[in-house]
Length: 235
Length: 314
Image 1: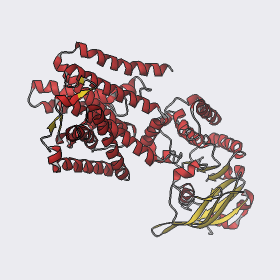
Image 2 (image 1 turned 90 degrees about the horizontal axis):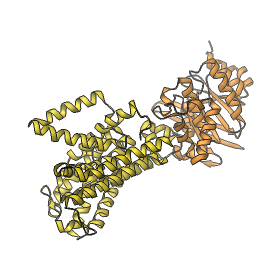
Image 3 (image 1 turned 45 degrees about the vertical axis):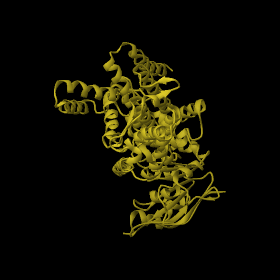
Image 4 (image 1 turned 180 degrees about the vertical axis):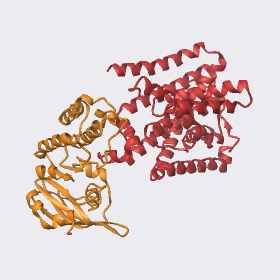
């Protein structure tokens, strides 16, 4: 079953065509990586999916319903979760409250506290639950951001460059985490780190100059000449 | 729960001290404190929008005056007794806040400040314009006979103190309760990072509008009570000065703390009171003290306490 699809999704900023008529389908349960050179329109594209950016034209269908006109918070309530590319936690609130804010949409009281602690344990931040989020290291803030996504138990989890700025060790544990979550939810992953893409994604979509350039298994994409040209130039 | 017990002890303790103070204070300070408690209630209302939600309004005098005139005009022209007049005042403040919120919350930051300031000025001039009803700048007196609530004469100083204390207690406890509720916690999160809150699935506009209505209703309750307890209503209470004062009180006492509004109001009131006893240039002394405080305790007195000693202080 297709969980998410877009048809002719486009966005132009004045003269610049950031995303250009993208038809995209994401079946339920899949881990899909979205890759492409800097400025290819990846963040704009997912921004239109989750409602942060209004499209210039085209439509977004989620779980069988056209959500193109819905504001962001209503899309989130339908089961999307979005983690930010630039870490966007609540720096002056403690770690547990950061996650609780995400959890309160669906849980209350003790159940909520339990879910928060469970997710914090999963990303390895449980012993820091009472610290101010702003005092966490950058890597831990990225993990907190992911915990805020996970605790919503979303049907579609959109991760915008989750490993950006992480150390090798942190990336390894992130891959582990992603494999665990993969069975439970559909994931759309914007990622620059090719080892993460190759090891975790079921399929890969490549965006270049706002257009969908190629789509296939990690292996197919790896061998695709057009993708190599887009990344490395045609010389 | 230990933290919660300490919180209750601190806030309950203050209310107990204020209650006991009425039997101990000399008449002059007795009257001052009654006034301070009503004004601090106004500051509590302001703090919910500014301190907790992060929206800096420069037009709260509009809500204070809506409460005062909602009550006062009801008494003067409709012959309402104090209880329904108070309710009319609070309702007027809530309705005005709802209408202003629907318009002003489309803007953010400096634009929000200007829009709220403009509407408050429009409210001020409206009061002046309809001076046949409102008596304009001069205002009107609410006679002693009109200030008897359930057989209690609110113009008597002991009753007035007790009424001010009851109002202040209600506002303080409501604020304490609100900020521990999920709704209040969401407001704090909006202050910290609104876009993130939106992307967690919250309708941030509805939350900000809710905060505005609660803030407006509390401010109006203070305005209505002020008119009723001190026996007059006047256009000066709708002026810019009464929009700036709660901002100052809250900043001094500590924005985003439950006790900050009271501490700030008390401090500012006595700062001016004491310095005016020393020199006619009392605003100079007040100004210097304010500058020093802003330099060394930028988060206000209670904010500084929270930063240094008690991180969980609500």
